[in-house]
Image (tube, rainbow, N blue to C red; front, side, top):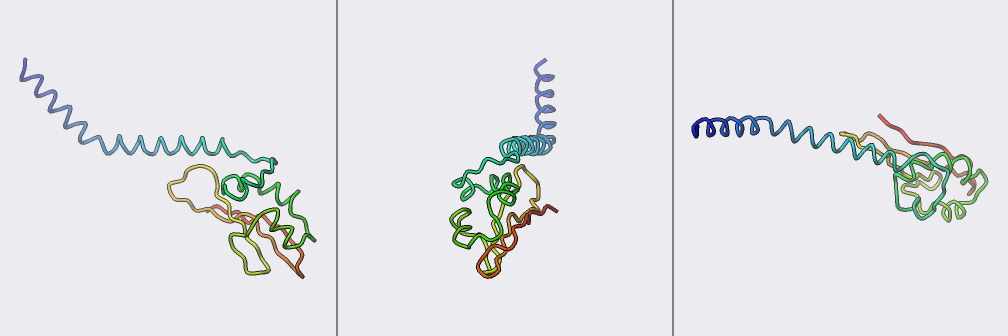
Length: 135
């Protein structure tokens, strides 16, 4: 009876040892995908404009890009007006200001970028574009 228990215990430990990488992988990826789904739920597309969040939260930026393009930054605005509204750009070559975003969710490899691109001509906004991309 004791020998049978020992054999069963050794067999169980052996099976768990063999399967543990697969079990841990499933737990990791399942958990990551669940957290990604929660993240997407937390950041739906919205028109709620919160300047302090725009300046600090790249995922929030992603959710309000349409609002910025449609209702916030308008052609003819000065660079100072845009800077007061959106803050310092993440990248700038003087004529083009780029504000980066981050797509909500979880991806094994994250191939996304861009955000809002503001182009100036003569010190005034000429175009405001959605420059988000996902590979």
